[in-house]
Length: 208
Image 1 (tube, one colour):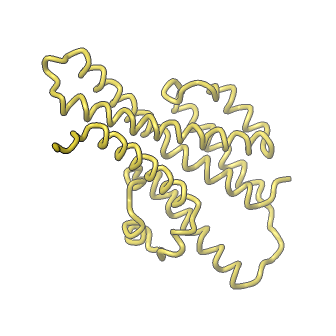
Image 2 (image 1 turned 135 degrees about the horizontal axis):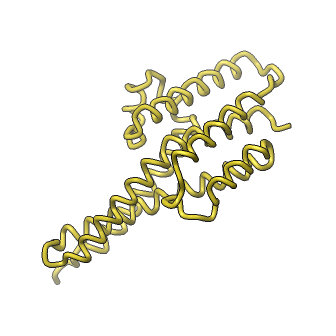
């Protein structure tokens, strides 16, 4: 039997992926279509449009790859601790297939099933000290509030920590320690790095 933290981790991953993956995949498809148009209509597409299309494609391909990594992590945990749910998701959508080839309406249902099964399996752990227990409870509530906000407003994944404080009403310290915040920050840092790399490539060198 998995411990409580592992089961909560499974539930959090399933909820996060159910909220983020469909939008990320849809944006990747849009960027691919735009890039294809720029390549096919070179007479109408300016250099700026082509550069912007390439950048958008790189950014959302990287975000999609990160989602795929999170999904593989989820399935590894699910196979180990909730094997029935893991098999159901794998049979529905091949894990090695690109995420843009998945049936996300059906996959969202399976991810929700994994989330529910994980939370239903959670068993009470030994009582921690009162202060630690209270801090963990605050972080858990803040994390749940973030995931709920992501489900209702996927665009909030680009929020700063100050925007999250204003959006869900929890302290910076509570949000900073949330698993969801750490995952979103890692995704945002990856996109920023890709943007910086692309910008450096497009920037002309200084004249000597």
